[in-house]
Image (cartoon, rainbow, N blue to C red; front, side, top):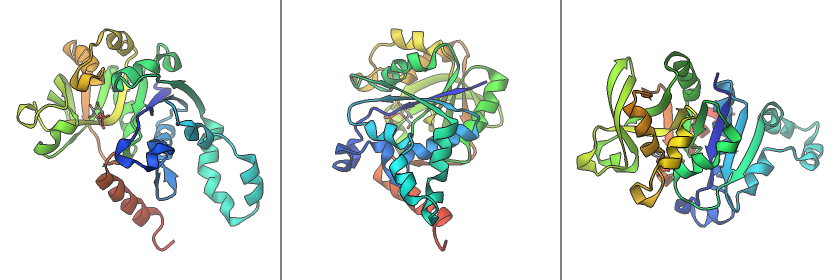
Amino acid sequence: MIKKALFPAAGYGTRFLPATKSVPKEMLPIVNKPLIHYGIKECMNAGIFEIGFVTGRSKRAIEDYLDHNPELEFQIEGSSKEKLLEEVNEMIDKCTFTYVRQKKMLGLGHAVLTGEPLIGDNPFAVVLADDLCEGDILSQMVKLYKKYKCSIVAIEEVPKNEVNKYGVIKGKEIDNGVFMVEDMVEKPEVNKAPSNLAIIGRYILTPDIFDLLKETKPGKGGEIQLTDALLKQAKDGMVIAYKFKGKRFDCGSVDGFIKATNYFYEKDFKGK
Ligand code: G1P
């Protein structure tokens, strides 16, 4: 039922300058695979093969990654290196990738709205590739969507002093790990947060979000916030929050990036 995903990928990634001067932050590798690779794999595992990117200037490396490179493929044909391209080639062959540029950086809500032509009138997933997830969180959310048919945000308990980095929800637990959202605030002050349940970068959104985003005024940081548009759906009882099963690395921060690198090195490389 969820066939499309949107990857907002227009941000500057200033925390990783100077690398992100010319390499999109979504292309920074965790060991040998760029962040988007992990996000796309997660989509495919959830049965999603139509993937849209909201990009910006200097993001062309994303398109090149998601296309064949015949010269390189010819060079390594028949060698042991060939298998290193297997997974990405499978993505290229099985998925369609579409792109639209966000011309001004007006926030995550604005980025999602920019993706409307790629999504149309369909429920869709949103993947923030710098939240690197293990455990097929999207598959879990797609299953939940079949039951609840409303927008879903993935949440995680975070230390109280870190709530100001996230969208934070208040909700009533209606099933194991499933909350009916009553309130949500973008990056609240630590002592004003409604809980320590933080939204992480996986969403399923119903397409009425686009009209709501069009009416959403700039919020926190002067940006058009997805959280604010979602709150309007929540007021109609149409948003649930899901405490996912799995792991998540905040690869938008240097700390999280290093933790993810060590984790995937141990898991996929060490001793092999
Ligand atoms: C965005 C959202 C925020 C969410 C976070 C998850 O913030 O606005 O609600 O908690 O992603 O990573 P950003 O990290 O882009 O500032």
